[in-house]
Amino acid sequence: MSDNKKLQGKQDRSRVSGTEGYEVEDLHQKYPHLTHQVVKDAIKSHGPDRKKVETYLDGLKKSK
Image (tube, rainbow, N blue to C red):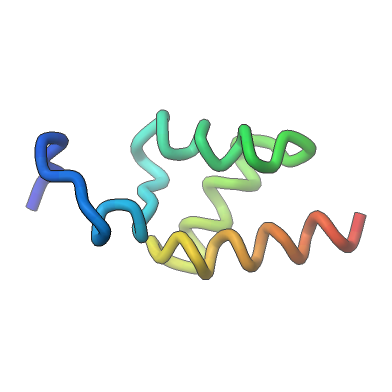
């Protein structure tokens, strides 16, 4: 099922897509020390749950 950009709510905010450039850019803005590819890989390996992806990226932030 394709993403309907007109339907934005809690469920949409809790998920992130690695194929949508603006969503990858949004996370990249939050974690500017990481590359876009690292963000995409995090989404791919941890799934579309934004909280899980951000928790993983937070861990990368602390280790550097």
